[in-house]
Image (cartoon, rainbow over all chains, first blue to last red; front, side, top):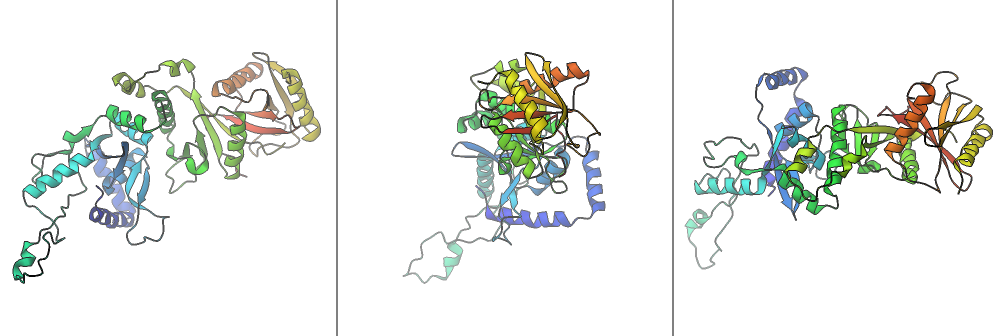
Length: 314
Length: 116
């Protein structure tokens, strides 16, 4: 369901966005602050083999996530102009599970069933004959006996360009379709997420609370597998700061402690371990993802943390 | 299996004779746990004060290698009772059965890593 044309348009936009000078950025922020009610960011949910993924193509949304909410995600698309490198990547932006839960739970965003939403949008455009591009494909087999000049006319365009910017409202183009009608609940998202992973409900809750605890302290957070952990912390935007800490969710063995501490120190970082203040918190085990479970995600995390680094002697 | 007592003695010996620490003493903290305190020959971190004593918690890698955040918190609260102040940092001395002792800093909360 990822269309090539939409991607390349967004890349150009993202280059433009980089070139904007600081004054216009300031005025942009002014505009955002003036708006009394900001519409929720739409998080397009794509289910591949039952594993739900959030992929964002809208550059404005990506900017808002980063500047306003400190949500980074990972760019995973190729830059069409520079396909031979993978240091700088382009849209879509993939969000990881804790970012998704945090955005939805905080009320900044809502999940959308992107597959059905786009299919229905395409159908509506097609039914009205609103084809917005000139991609012409021969639909009928060429008859070698026919020398008809009208063959070109019998061709039919089979690409339908639907804009990346999705709307909360019914519009001129989409009278019967709006994104809000395709909302997916956090419950359904987590249900299919948990089914597709080896994590239990309680682990998901505990790890999410770790993420929330760190987010509350103002850290910028990236996935941490590159450094052998679960998360990596930055004191500010990673474009301006080096990361400081590798977060490990489940530090249970002294051997991990030594391995992790030594590795982190060698890359000028430390290891952060997080645990529950009250261990009975974890006992509230639920067998299924129900409303009670979703509500428990919103609870204030009661966590404590320690930073580990090699002492430099011994 | 090494007792808590001999574990602390081993760390004490290692600190005095291998790392040249001075005034190394063993204290009892809560739950029968032992902590070692001493003065390192030089500052362990550039932000430390001169002659700042360091608390070291001895742990065996072989007899009980499991560790939890709750347990680390108990070390901090145990030392807080002796010092009347929760320390910003403690050191864990991990003792292996081959004669190796390794030391790791544990800071309270999330801190900036040392600049080496």
